[in-house]
Amino acid sequence: MTAQIINGNELAKEVREDIAARAAKLTAAGELPGLAVILVGDSPASMVYVLNKERACKANGIRSILEKYDADFSEAELLERIRVLNEDPSVHGILVQLPLPDHIDGRKVIEAIDPEKDMDCFTVVNTGLLMTGQPRIKPCTPYGVMKMLESIDYPLRGAHAVIVGASNIVGKPMSMLLLQAGATVTICNSKTRDLGHHTRLADVLIAATGKRNIITADMVKPGAVVIDVGVERDENGKLWSDVDFPNAKEVAGYISPVPGGVGPMTITMLLLNTIEAAERRLEAKKK
Ligand SMILES: Nc1nc(=O)c2c([nH]1)NC[C@@H]1CN(c3ccc(C(=O)N[C@@H](CCC(=O)O)C(=O)O)cc3)C=[N+]21
Image (cartoon, rainbow, N blue to C red):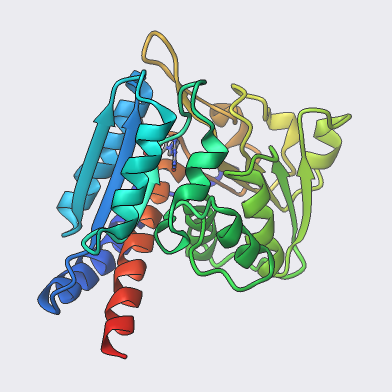
């Protein structure tokens, strides 16, 4: 049997309707939602993602402020830009596109962002709130994956979720959201012995390594839900991901494609986080 496809584009469209309606309401109330995206350097992949984000903002009534700097932009200059955006009341969210050039301390830059405006949920404060079960902002990619699981009404309570990849951006925060939903969670990393042994136990398999086709069909439990987070465009413009989709889809029960899976949902959750930050600001003003 062939798996049911979890269509991220379709789902993103649905969520964006709600976002656009809330953006219009905020604007009418005098709180035009604004997102600042900072890009340092000119890696073509980063440029594509950043332009996608800008396009999605504009299409849904969110003001997008794109700040683009050369690769030799200094750490001090970047910290100063973040300070200015932190103070700017017309900006509700700040995203610093990663990776940053080597001469910049990424951790220092992330921590400079006002946690209220940390749309990625990367700061230590927001990570701590997430880990203690009181998230204020949810990390975009894991949040998008949760929406995808919700869209198929998957019963996570008691299910075994296996995450491959333990990054701060996806794997670790993903594990927190799944735990909070009642799943039993295994996190595998690059040193895991016999990876297939673990992935074959997964009712829900989340692949987030950035290693091309690391998840082959024989590593998938029949009927499992497979979510492919890895996405990478090579020198020739070919798109790669973590899951060997053509073969895995013959074993899985549900599977997310690349493109059109997690990617559009990540951007959508970034917009939703911006809307929620603007709504919190409006509420605070009323008090
Ligand atoms: N501070 C920060 N936050 C991020 O969220 C962040 C980041 N830095 N750095 C880079 C990664 C990557 N990322 C993607 C978002 C959407 C697609 C996406 O929409 N992909 C399309 C395909 C894109 C294509 O055709 O190349 C899809 O999957 O359908 C991909 C990748 C967010 N990132």
